[in-house]
Image (cartoon, rainbow, N blue to C red; front, side, top):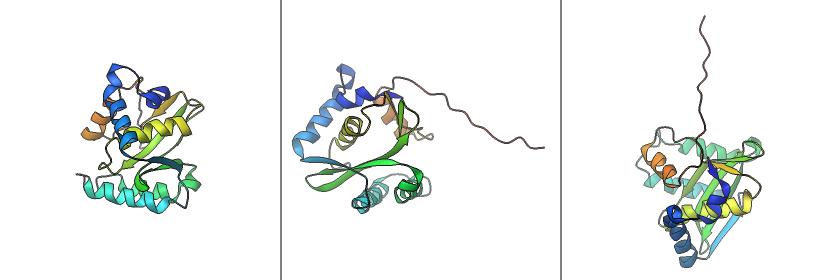
Length: 171
């Protein structure tokens, strides 16, 4: 879990690299973040396709299908999202939902990494524009993915939530 405030400004020395990437994105591009609607869903799907194409993970091992289903069923699932643009071109998106009154959970974050700093922009602007009243943001579990875990740790988590696995007892 991360304090939402951290994503808004990337404060302090330990977040300098994230803040620097955000500032580079803001200087290099004319950024725009809009709510995820039917009008921009095709752009989100195009980002998802590009993300999968450039991912080292095979499609069967990635969360591509789950993300696509979440995009397509976002209203039925009660998901909130945002689409980012850089100089008018689709750059990335986030999709998630409130966990409770204090925490917003981001289920999916996908972007075109050719736009340097796009993830830092997505998290920062989303925290500012879509999560101003949430104390925490949860970036979901890394599902054992080494790269995703390393990325999440680079944002310096403020709290670690305990995960539990429940199964039905046979017999």
